Image (cartoon, rainbow, N blue to C red; front, top):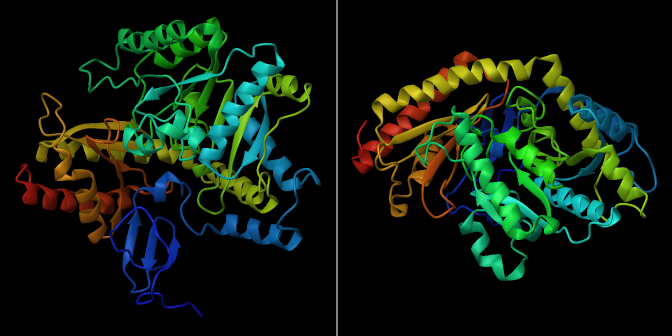
Length: 451
């Protein structure tokens, strides 16, 4: 029997003050509360539930694994589930990236990637390299190590005294800066900032450059300008700097490839993955690395790092089934085709709502930015709380979307629209109907036009 929690005291605390109903069940792209109200999961949770909810193949794989074992510590046993998932992940990676280390989530994956990079430097006589350059804005996780490379002031400022803050370079926000993202000169412009920072810091001290192939929560589905990723790869190679792709949000098939960075000819040395790889069924993440990097570390005594649940057989069985379903159902292809339809519908909203300044993204990782003035790109005053009000208006209509502030955390507003990769064209219509209603409500309340 399901407990009725609707009127019970809660012993939990989270980030939001908004009351939320009790989840009863979920299937496909829909979720129901205990009162029977249906919600469309228009953001896949936090861009996690890439294949939709309650997929029977994944649930069956989990049941089969639970009947065999639910835990096997990685230093005591090799498990079929972890070996099979690692092999499948390497199958989709770049040539030479053939070693996997499992973790439980995105923050752990990012920290693991940085620690592997550092241990490789020590193992190969490059102990002076320790600085990990990242971008501003960016988001790479909530632990102190991941926050040190995060460029999102609202989340990092309270903890700055507690961590070693790493160098930052500007993210390639071409639209905001009034530059053409399709012009190779734009990509070269932003990449040159990375090289300048490496030289400023001292190349012998720079360990790695950490980048999201397509930006996530901090930049709202920011797609790199033409030539940027390739230029970054060349700069890193020239200065002996490792390139780390944060694929926590861009991975998992949303961009038409299992690893989003494969859309560019700019192979990383290490990747951090999570979210869509467990697809919400279990906590799961990993790093995928070049074999020669790993071998150098192992030859010097092993990787001095680990988590209790790393390589958990139940999590790995679920992760393998997730990838199998992505492949079997052609979800990556659907993500591109239905994602293009969804993006076109979002662009149409600009005709009605003058406060939508930009629509961006790829596949099923899309966002639109809210502005006070489309010509100047000036943000709305933070006191308007556009990012929060639009999300709440959509929620009241049974649509879940995701929001953040796009200009470092204290100003700018964007809404991420990233439904599961199984979304159909008809369901795009459902999403747009509810989203349009939410935007009309926001327009009427603020007098910004388009009500």
